Image (cartoon, rainbow, N blue to C red):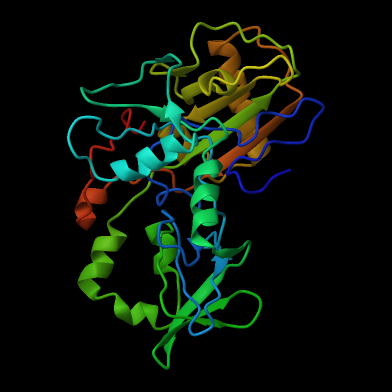
Length: 330
């Protein structure tokens, strides 16, 4: 199975569409479980590093772990720039639209909050296609599954230590993993954060939730009038998406897939429970909402310990450029 997507598609006789599962998505990768260490002038949501003197660009992957490049794909947020006025980051959207990586979201998402001037986009090949586009442009050489443990200053260079392998030196290191993982790093980076800054960073809190993907045989019908739906009356489930329908890539050759997101209270309450137990509970609640669903050929459950920033204003961080949550973080 591919590991570049936050929720990879299991191999089955009816594989889900490439890049499954895709939101709709919010254009903020930094708060998800994707992190990267690479030299890439235009890559967003990345840990960046330029190797000194050699001209070669390298990247180290990250979960605190150096690169899992793709955004977690089941995110129920939308790409939502402001269409009216000069919103921050609109140039990125223009470029992605020109390359066909993003397309306007035309499918009906029931219960999605819309504001005047909002434009919603979807990535037909999955949000990982956005990351792959910028990595290709950057010329970065990306390495996966390396866990950063320390960052030290050595002879005016940043030395990055990993769980395995020798330390490497870079001119520049940019961290975009969740704040709690930054605060766990050891070495000289600890001294770079003042006591005031540390208190501000420690005040940042995150919601937690689970996502469940269900994959079906080609030809299976999911008979609902929407491509996505926000749920307000269930203690477990917050969002359901018929993913291929939402991305407008329905095909007789590819089976449909369903993406389910839990509420934050459920995610917090079951954060330490086994994945099998959580999956069973989500499926039970899904059957209450959509009775009579066919039997999937494969499932995939994903835990997001750090899903969305809840108290980002306390740390002096502002929501920029009109990119706003599509619903309350519940």
